[in-house]
Image 1 (cartoon, helix red, strand yellow):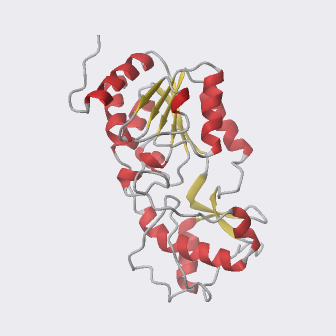
Image 2 (cartoon, rainbow, N blue to C red):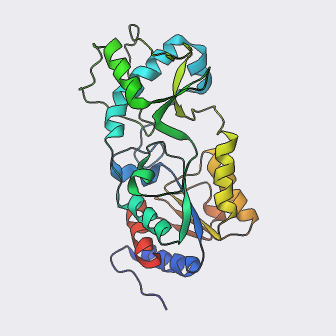
Image 3 (cartoon, rainbow, N blue to C red):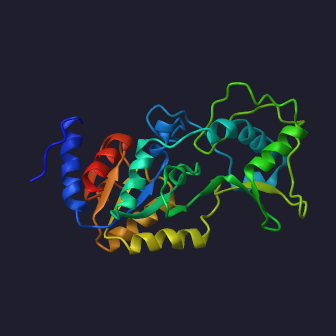
Length: 281
């Protein structure tokens, strides 16, 4: 018999009791989205109150120098605040669950690196990571801080100290970019982009295989903080469903996978994951 969690809203507490019963004795994979990082100060694309925005597509980035200037200027302004974010208790709860052997790892759609900072050991960055920069021609990888220093030197007029509003991918809105100098690859002179999956770009096959392997080796799937609008998340959910794995979704508000969940917990990811770690780790 489980004990009702009195600190949480009754409906959420009952759902957590059900989840604990479902997951006890099972090793589960975890898929996370932007909702896990909102308590670290990184906004959600689709959460309640999130402003409507149209992120730049990969095709736009490749096709037009003005788009590349706008992207790099905005990404540069937003990156300092983005990089200053720190893991919250939800990230740390997932690290504890992995350490205890309850979770086999984390698949994340986020590009903020906070799961690794929190201590998670097996992390699949499904959409890449903002702290790396990739040359699209020769494949050379650069540390983001090195590129940041080059941008500062080439664009001393850019106001990096001003208040900016960032997006989940670290981007910020910039309008005057005509004189912005875009960095290029110091190895081959090719175009650079942060090592993240843009809208309109496919998740690298090897990354998806890593994520799929975690789901295949698990006895259940927990999805936290994702509305499951992005195709990669739905594919992993479907893989779990086809294998008849129990599926738990933790998200404030509806997701595209609610009808396929064994349990849906409608609540904040931080408090829910903390309670699950307290009782399952």
